[in-house]
Image (cartoon, rainbow, N blue to C red; front, side, top):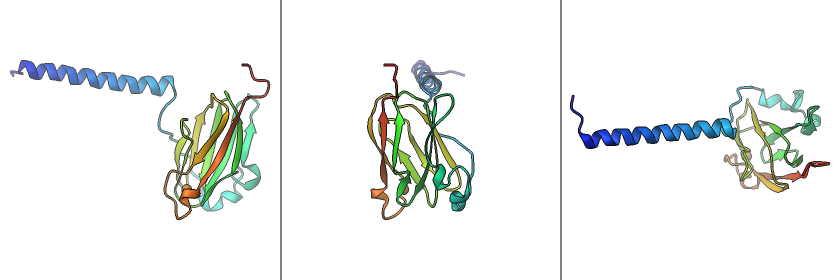
Length: 164
Ligand SMILES: [Cu+2]
């Protein structure tokens, strides 16, 4: 079968571009831990307040034995609870978020903390904030009339006895 020289050239060019793009995706997925959040854990959203992990008393920030931090939150029309969160900088943080009612999204600009919060599932995001400061935390999935007001504040403070 004859393949025209120009056509052959473009087959090579497009193949090389594909390899480069797949390579970059793989590089960032492995190197920087950037990938779509995927957590298949389910939960009964109508009974969050009766669950161990997501009942009101157990929400918020906890420091684990290994120095990492876990944050448990509930998204509900129209807010994220607890509404004020304070976490240390340069510390691995695991967020676990569940919706009490409808589909929500949680988004902290300029970080990798961005995921849908689907009722019936637990959303999990692992992150680390390199810079201290105040970050807004928005809902980015339309969830009803109060959606525009669904946001809270995330405060990142320099870790106690920081090593910088
Ligand atoms: Cu919402």
